[in-house]
Length: 452
Ligand code: SF4
Image (tube, rainbow, N blue to C red; front, side, top):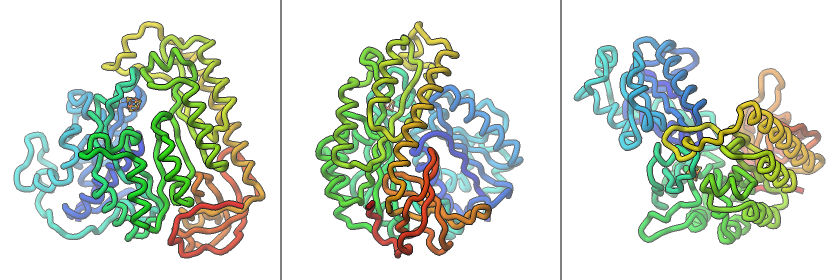
């Protein structure tokens, strides 16, 4: 059986799409994933273009794949394949560049290639096309995992002035509730204990459907399905964290994870307006307060974009003070990266890169402090974790993740993997929490969270 390798850069949505592609390849084309250092017959590189650095890393990943898998058919897809296909096509060794519209049918088109080779496929791959069959999956990209991503939405209509994503992924499109439930049902049947609802802009979920739907309604549908797993949201914009959504999460009794990742980007009103973000600092403050009031133990994270053109010292201090003042659990800090094709690329009041680095450093240290404080608040308390790994060969410890995204290490048995265990936290640093078993791992048939 021929072997494939997937290389994915960028966001959870890209990871989710790569997983789906891997499953389709396994099921439809008689491919199996490479094991260890095996050479591949097919490499699919799922690229990212969200920053200039991501684009550079994507091109490096393509060259590395060509080098490490001589003779393999190299397919390049993802956001960079949509925004800059010519550059990627010009890389010697790239067999095919697949943009947004063709990406969904990629596995099928690779299967169909046995009947009619595409012009740019190359001789080495043409030889390997013989032997496709409909043998069921022999390899499984989801094997050994306890958490799966579920794509509920793609694309974005917002056109924030710094963001290339709407150009790369097109307008917002939602997956029908029926298909989302079907996918979650399959994952639950396969033993997954957590799903992460993923998209570019999931707060816009359902607005393009007929009749229109909302994310809150989708969550209600999922909860109504009574699947034996917990549901986590990926990131959600401040104004889309609605009362109804929060109430659904409260009523779920822990089946919707108390973990909310809310992009802030800037705490300065003028910079937010220039970014074309539709909220102000007070809206963000309100969103955090609304979550904290309902979920005292929730993980609340934020993205911050540092060094946007025109970000004065005062504007940066507004961001720093807002974050320092709020009960956030962690930060993801990104330096501004001008992307050709976006409105902000033309803004001429760019910030000195050294200043951007210094500001990022300050914010990252603030984020570390916040994470440590959040973690320390759980020392001495009992919490429930989903055991995600077998014992680490070096430390002998298992790793688990709580509904509110605490990463916990504790002693236990390999057989506990994919089960819920109740542990008592004994120590914490800014990365991990240490724990001792409080009660044995159960069957893990229900992903509810609790702490005491
Ligand atoms: S909401 Fe703004 S930042 Fe997010 S994907 Fe859409 S355009 Fe980009």
